[in-house]
Length: 228
Image (tube, rainbow, N blue to C red; front, side, top):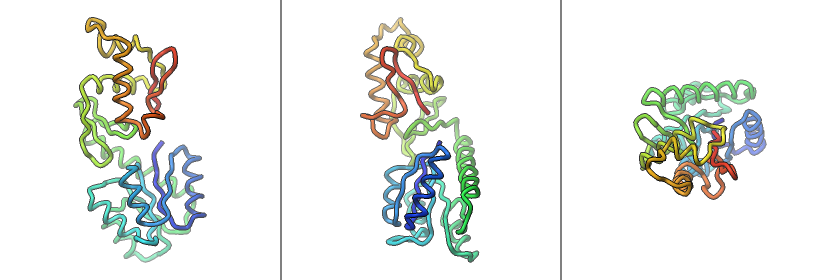
């Protein structure tokens, strides 16, 4: 599942794309002009941007140029109603990862999306063993965490170890006792409250809304479960 930002001023197309992406298992955010798209891209840090070329307030070219100028390397697929080769070349030169010309089939767009996301994942893996964990990219081996703009996120060794254990057992409810044993070791005399306190810290860094967690869930009467 990826988080996709669709920047498209034709609302019928935008809603149609949203429905198809959500049916394919992705989370989707919409923007209807270039300025809104630029703001949402910077604030929400999606995994992929579908960017129309002809937009009000800021063109797709300008949005792409400004994002790359800000050092934001989120993959971009440009949509264009034009067939001229110069538009496609310019878009790619400005930093777009792919383009597709209207009209297009949903199947073709979904295939392009999967290909771009796959390439982005391979590129990230080449620089280290990075994992997508909520809002973060985490390299557990080297105890490094970054946000989507590549800025370092400070975490303690125990925070990394706890998050690593939860991610390694994704989808399974893990008891507090098991976390205390595997992450802290009972010889250190931790308490179940120790686990709870560290989960609060992790949620502030991993979750979009820590008060309504979607990744690190509480399993009442048991402990916690990580949901990819």
